Image (cartoon, rainbow, N blue to C red; front, side, top):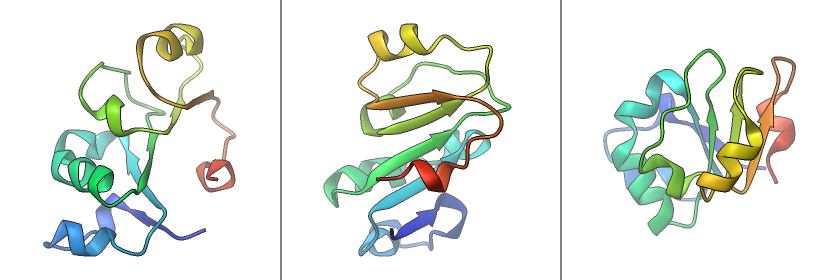
Length: 101
């Protein structure tokens, strides 16, 4: 499975995404990832967001997200119902790479 972490994207974000299946973004990076999220949709890149250690805050980022991992304090059912995220998981022991498809 070809993936790239947001922190490894180069200045030409769209070119950096080409050839990858997944973009992985951590919660602390989310507010800086708007351009990467936009180009991920245009390039058919799936997006995984690891929000462990961060509060879930609704936003446009949800539209581009396919996998989201949360702390145990969040309600998976509420998030699935309110967003278009395909798969939402909870737990500290989850390896995000093993959940990519």
